[in-house]
Length: 125
Image (tube, rainbow, N blue to C red; front, side, top):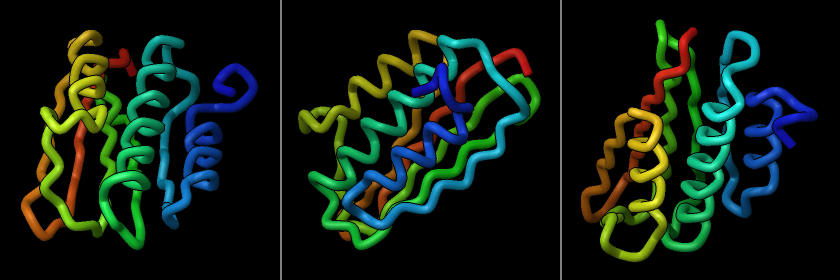
């Protein structure tokens, strides 16, 4: 899908397919290295899968921005919170993917919600 569409277009497709209503707000200046686009796509796809399966959310939002030499990704939902990397929810895989690209991963998910996942990837913008 990334080869045919821009990263923003591919992410819009993920949002449209998500069973939880999802807003996609992606501003990416042009094409990025293929490995960065693939990693960003994987991160959003896995995060939205987690939202649909585990959060009990009524809505989700994805924000992607190029800033300096970084691509910043935020996925949030209004669900029950309590997400943890050791819960088998795929969050550990998201962290591994981000860190494999020298990126950062942060998760805020207090009991009762909301949940916000933030990833920053170097991309040479």
